Amino acid sequence: MNVKQRLAKGLKRARDFSEAMLSKYTSPKQWTHQVHPAANHALWFAGHMTVTDNFFIGALDPSKAQKLDDFDKLFGMGSKPTFDPAAYPAPEKVLAAMRERRGTLLQILEALPESEFEKQTALGNSDFLPDKLSVFELAVWHEGIHSGQLSVASRSLGFPPIFG
Image 1: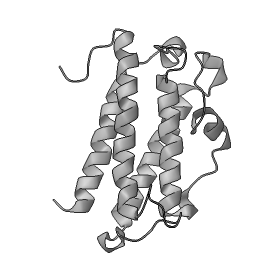
Image 2: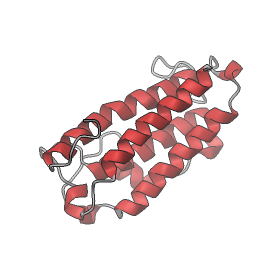
Image 3: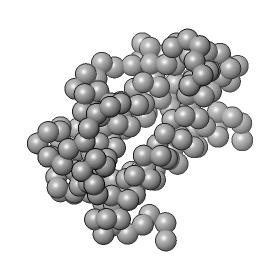
Image 4: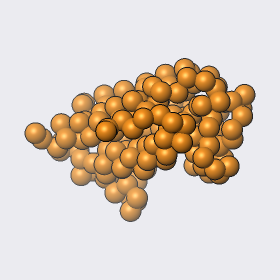
């Protein structure tokens, strides 16, 4: 398995795990359930994955990034989740955006020659994202961090674990 295949597998596996957890959420109250007033909830998670994948897309191919002002305010860095479902778009809209942005990120990966992996991103030099390969590695890691938070919220609602 080459590097590109490993990255694609990691991105898909992380998202499949997240999607399995998100499939359990059905009511507005569940979608915005917080285990603590400052904790992230499932709807914030889905929106945050959208915004973050869009950021990664912009780092790789700015022409494919979208202007997501409303999502950035609700789900971007520094946003504060609230338990009020009325403060957010419908879960179906957020999930559709999350899926579309991950699909675009995977398309970029598929089209990117491996010889480009060591080249810097459109953001320029950065210790955070020193090259294009690091964008895909960070996408998997980032989703793992937040899916752990989602797992805690899911278990607090009584949902069974995905594995087990």
